[in-house]
Length: 154
Image (tube, rainbow, N blue to C red; front, side, top):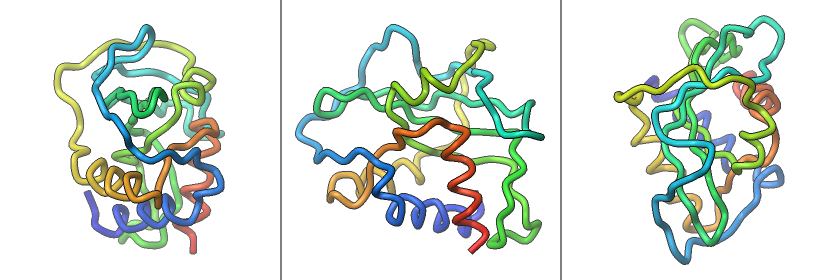
């Protein structure tokens, strides 16, 4: 992933804490969820012009009793002044509350055995989360994409 995108997403995580629900990690465990599991591909309520965008569930975990769903998005048209092309078609890692994902998804497309690479973005998020400097999006995926784009335009 382009390092500028990683740094931009980290910036989003730190700046947008007011949109996040924050909790320090007391206990972290992978979890079984009744709706989401790693590898699932979903359609979701997208922004205009991104109707073919899909999300992939990267990881589902429970931290302090809250289910966090980590997703990757593809098929985007996000203005990104930090990239050579000025457009990003993917976001490799965003953490959401389960409720935000439930509100966003529209159709399960299937499951994949191979996930896109997300470990670096996840690691950065995890470090920020554990120190109280990051959280999870509680807004819809569509709204989060819009917020990411506004940040990348700066």
